Length: 328
Image (cartoon, rainbow, N blue to C red; front, side, top):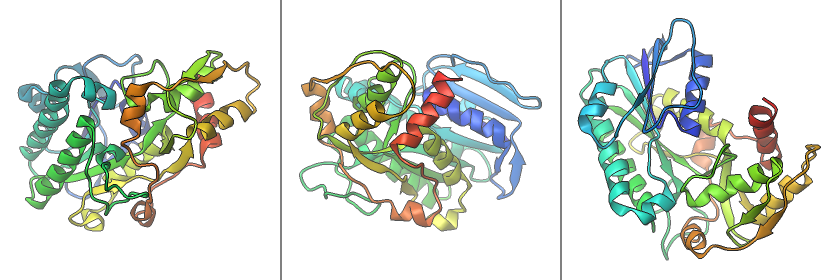
C-alpha cells in the first residue's frame, strides 16, 4: 500500500516516515495489514535527508497544497493512507489570515476530496491542535468534550477541519481521524513561526551551547508531549478500528502540564555533561498574547482508554532529543 504524508519534509512528517519504514505495514482500507511499498513526502520544500528502504518507493514532491490538481496527483491509488500534517502554524496564521485559510482550510478540503475520490474509504489522519480551545468561557482543564471556541486563525482552521473529518466519515466518504496535539517538543533546527516554538528552543538552544531569551513569563503553563510519543500517536490513531472512535473522530493526545519555569529547571538540572547556554526571560507581547488564549491544562481520559502512548515527561524528552539529534 501507499502512504502520503503532507508536511512530509517537516520535523514530524519526516520522523513519521522513518518510523513507518521501520514498522513496514499499516492497516489498509480493507481492514487488513498490508506492506508499505510506497511513501510520498509532500511539502513546499525538499527534506534535508533522503530516506531509502529496499522494496519501498520513496518520493519527495514539492508543491502547493492549496492547488487541488496537485493534491489529486498525490493521492493516486485506492490502497492508500494519508497523514495530513501540512499547515500554516499559529504565529504565521495571525500574521497572514489569507494564507492560513488557503493552506489550512482549502488545502485540508483538497486532501479530503482527493481521499474521497478513491475507492474503499481510505484512512486519513489529520493533525489538529489544542489551539482549537480558547475564549472567555474556556474551562480550566480542557478535554475531548470541551466546547471549541478558538481565538486564533490557526485554531479556527483546525476546529473546522475536525468537524469536516467527522462529517466526511459520517457520509462514508473516507475513514477520518484527527489527532489533537498539545505543544510538541523538542523540535531540532531553527525556530518556526509557531508561537509555541519557545517550548522547544528553551531546551534546544542551551543544550547546544547557545544563549536563549524566553519570550513568555516563567509562570506560563501549557500541555506538552515529546515528538516520539506524537509520532506513535499518529500511527496508533491510524490503526484503531473505526468503531472504537464512533462519530467523534477527534482525540486529544496525552500530555504533561508544565510551566516555562519547569522547562528551565529541567534543562538546567539535566545531567548531560554539556556546557549550557545562558537562559533569560524577556516576554514578547506578540507571543504572550497568542499563548494566553490557549488551554493551560488538559485531560486525556479518552486517549488513555484507547491505549495511546505517552512518554515519561521532560527528562525523557530531553534524553530522546540528545540521543536522536545531538549524539546521533
